[in-house]
Length: 158
Image (cartoon, rainbow, N blue to C red; front, side):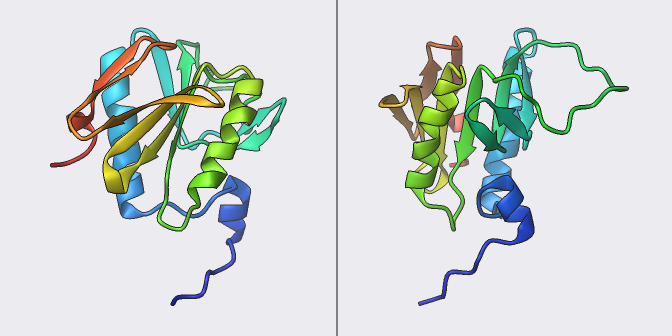
């Protein structure tokens, strides 16, 4: 059995293990497909450093209402809560670590929290820290809090 390696400085900053090839693929697909479908309503940010009232985090994807982007005045840590957060399970990550973030996000004002399990082609959409709906395989994800629908066949390869 392979020994568990300590987190690198990069991983410590992100608060989670380094993403894998599949993780990166799914993250890119989600951000691209969502942006293409909902660019008139939302902005989608990947690996955005958040400094919320409940703590720091770096979600895989953040969903915000459309906003002005000021190229001259960048933000290293964003303090405004996103409407939605998407976390994708990495191979070295513990599912419980992600699920425990649900309370942190909802307490900070997030309206929807998705947990993506690439191995099982499954997405859990949390409506609060304790209640979620599961979407898998060929389902069409429905997020009522954000009024988003997304066929999972567009995210997970056959």
